[in-house]
Structures are given as C-alpha cells and as structure tokens.
Amino acid sequence: MENIILPKLDSHQKSYAGIPEAIFVEDVESFMKLSGSDENVEKVLKNLDEQHSKYKFMEFNIISRKRRLRQQIPDLAKSIEMVTILKSQTDDQETQFLLSEGVFVKTRIPPSKTVCLWLGANVMLEYPLDEADELLRQNKNSAEVNLKCLEHDQEFLRDQITTTEVNMARVHNYDVKKRQAKKVTEDEEN
Image (cartoon, rainbow, N blue to C red; front, side):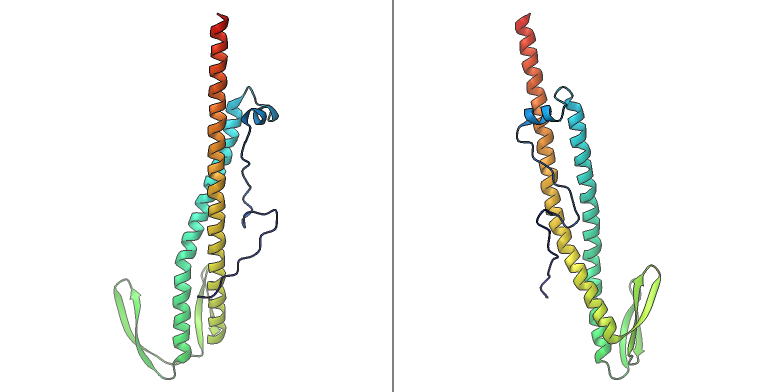
C-alpha cells in the first residue's frame, strides 16, 4: 500500500473540517460570573446542550461519509484491477461477469483500448485504458486521504463531545452545590 500523505493543518487548526474546539471550564464559578449567567444555570446548560447536539450531528455526518468511503475504496481497487486485466489482454478472452445478483453470464471480450467509467450522477465516460487507470488510482488515493482526515476529525470530535459533557456535568454540579448552600443558609436563618 502506498504512503498516504495527509494535508497539513495550520498551527491554529485542530481539525481538517474546521470543527470548533470546546473550551474546558476549569473554574465553573468564574465561568458563570463571566458569562453573566450566575443566576441562570439553565441558560448555560442550554447553550452547552446545543453545542453538544451540534457535535453529535457532525459526528453522524462523519460516520456516514466514512461508511461511503469504505465502500468506495474496494470498488475503486476492483476497477483498477479490471483495467489492468484489460491492458494486458491481447486476444479474445472468455470470462464470466455478474449480470444480476446470483446470475453470471459467460462471454467473450475482444481486446480494447478504451473503457467506460461510471462517474456517478448518471454520467459515464469512455477513457483510454492508461487514462482510466490513472484516474482510478488518483480517485482511490484521494478517497484514502479523505478517510484518514475523517478518522482524525472523528477522534478530535470525540474529545470535543467529552469536554462538552464534562462541562455540562460540572455546571450542573455547581448549580446543585449552590442550591444546597442556599438551602442551608435559609435553614440557619429560620
């Protein structure tokens, strides 16, 4: 397998897709005062929950894109293999191909200098064998690079989700402690 060279990230960039970084709340009390929501914990929790939902949506999209790429890469490898076979062919060869699920057909394939590639979106183009081979290899390499970038982004995203969940728990616990302290103060006054 070829070495996969990932694009470089900028010094301030942590994700290829530009996923925003979740800031860990070290001091919840200072954070609540700075956000101006010391009395309104629900507002802060709502904002954190919205951020968490956005991260989960991004994660869903990354997972579905990874699934598509994982299906695409073996298909491209099979296409490259077929073009290689066509390039080496010198006379009519008898072969079998899949007509529909479970139905194979025997046929003779004459030598060819071109192949039609399905590009998607109801588009098929005829290419010379060398150009088709080069295009398929470029597409396969690109798909592998994109898959590696998505895997990196998914790991980064997991960290952001965890950080957001920890922040939510810390803000909630801060609110519980604050309410308990307020209740103890009220009980002492009575």
